[in-house]
Length: 307
Image 1 (cartoon, rainbow, N blue to C red):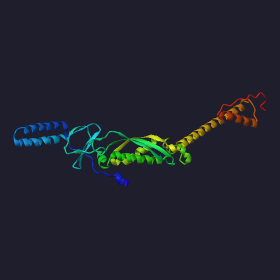
Image 2 (cartoon, helix red, strand yellow; image 1 turned 90 degrees about the horizontal axis):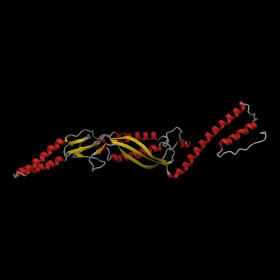
Image 3 (cartoon, rainbow, N blue to C red; image 1 turned 180 degrees about the vertical axis):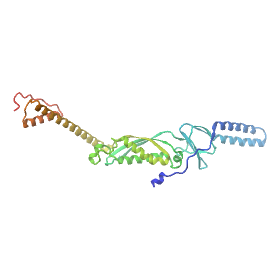
Image 4 (tube, one colour; image 1 turned 90 degrees about the vertical axis):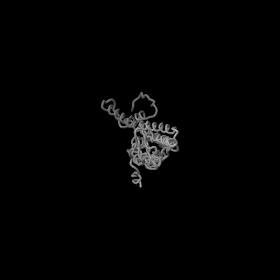
């Protein structure tokens, strides 16, 4: 079913028949002036002909079209696709050609500018089942006008729905944070918080596959909102703080052990003092307390023998 949807190709885009708008404007104006002159000749037949030509002139004025940069017309005539105009300029087309824009029926032109679509924050469970809130900004533009107009009912609504679905799918496929690897995720696995750029690229690739049928191109996807859901945010903050404390303590212990080893080695190499195993153990204990303690150690001066 998915492959059938992606292979929809109702019409092939081609350029609508058109002519120079300035030349057409001059000719239509001359026709209108001549028609007015006929209308006031006093002859009944010429007056009727002049009246008819006046009506025709005003109808022909409806065929004058102006296009600004990054705008386009997709024309239909009595329900049939007749062509596209997408180069800026002043044109004359068949006055019965009607521009069709499913995004806004009142505006006949279709914008091909890069636009943004913001996905509101959604609550979804990540790969490990933790509820999170995630939102993204999608930058896109129309590249194939006939697909955008005829393959889907409303290409902007189609983009919005696909963006929501893809965002949920990608969020469910990855854990929120690498710290969650202790609960069963691989420590080297891509995470939503730690690999935001890679996740954004994955979102862009998957979304592009879905909206290609609508003639849209995704230029960029940015994750704008990412956090644990309020009901677990406090607990996850405590967990992250605990993990940070453990990591810091580990570094402190590693450094303290190295410093104790260096102190014992230098005392021994320089023959400053000879320590039996019991005194070495006591010295190691004292140094580790001093180096690893949360508070400053209170020195005690020993005026007697260490034995």
